[in-house]
Image (cartoon, rainbow, N blue to C red; front, side, top):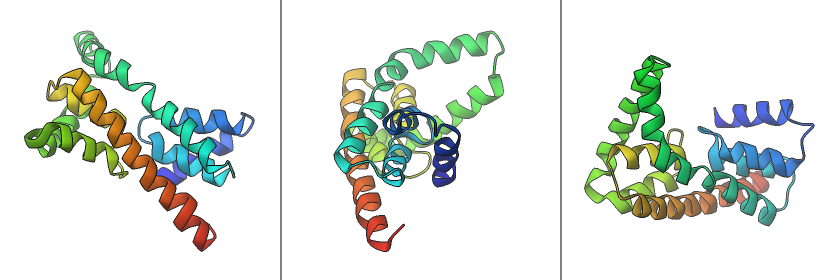
Length: 166
């Protein structure tokens, strides 16, 4: 699914600078760093360029999510805007948080660091907020998790995919 979404964004945003595409994809929920690194690889950007841009793009929204997501969700619920969607987001975050709850810091870091659908900095931020983790602690766990995800995705895309010729 991530691959298809990345291809779609590249196709429709092809008029943009390649670096901008990687940055924007890396900021997007669902695609995040995974998608940004794949996009950089598919657009033949150098590994270091892709790494820096995807990392910045993925980390930039995190403080805002950690500090404002709860207020935004409460406002939307109060005014009956996207209420079903918000409940779905909260339920998903609550479900994911049960996995992380016992070892908050390490759990959150690994949750964010394993580049699978439904994991990443956005969901990790929602989970941290659901668990009411200390924001500084949560931010550090998310940053470390994003670095882990970056290494995994670079090995996968610039290593494995490159070796098999994709």
